[in-house]
Length: 278
Ligand SMILES: NC(=O)c1ccc[n+]([C@@H]2O[C@H](COP(=O)([O-])OP(=O)(O)OC[C@H]3O[C@@H](n4cnc5c(N)ncnc54)[C@H](OP(=O)(O)O)[C@@H]3O)[C@@H](O)[C@H]2O)c1
Image (tube, rainbow, N blue to C red; front, side, top):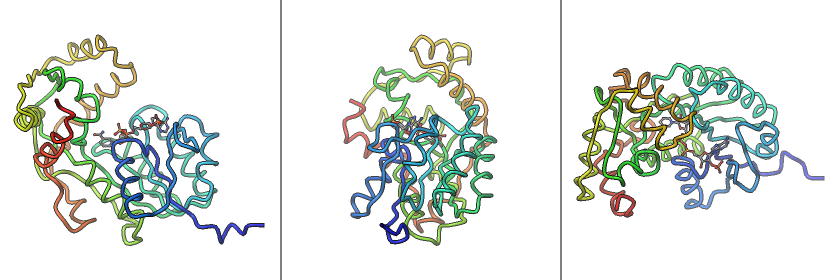
């Protein structure tokens, strides 16, 4: 019989094919460290909305990079995180590294659930990702040559997903990051108009920018056949999260890694080389 205490435990990376999870997984592969992938399409499937998949995915797991999808602000997320935290503890996990968003009441409630569990925790509370312009919904608009947003009144310190991955990788591999809340942002406050101008400059393309009333924006999303749950989420994010409350820089990258975060310009310059904006 195998003594479970002698079996080496490994981390589980949820959404390991997503914007931050894939980068964390890359760092494990590059370091020759073992880990398990956790998404609906991984070898051992993990689905946030099917708790019967959790126990198998958590078997033999020491720590988890917790990336909820689509967003901790959606109805029901809090209950799912509470159930998952409980099951993870029962399965013998001893450390959760959780990705959350800034200025979202619902996300901060989920942080509290994790922080009050008997397991160790690290919270990585992120601003909007720069990669939303190359690996998410803004990419289609950029390729079309016209970006539409409902609000552009405030600035956001877009963070590079590579910085988030560096912080998460460090947190999963060094105990000194346990019990820390790292609020991670980029080093510049930018409006959407400024980010699109930057992307236009580095890619040498004309990209139009239009700010429209919220009702017109919702109509535009509906015409583009964006699923209703995402329309609701975008509406929420543009009204609740981008209302100025997050227009400040935070020092999480520096505190965790001892270096400054990557700038939006460096993200744009590196991303144009991939050809994604052609
Ligand atoms: N994007 C931002 O700017 C930002 C900023 C701050 C915080 N966050 C937080 O980051 C988290 C991730 O958001 P994201 O949009 O950037 O996604 P993402 O990390 O790119 O994750 C997408 C991946 O999640 C997996 N996935 C989808 N549904 C799943 C499910 N039911 N169970 C397990 N895995 C599932 C999918 O893989 P499969 O198809 O294989 O399942 C997909 O490849 C959210 O909690 C969000 O609030 C995002």
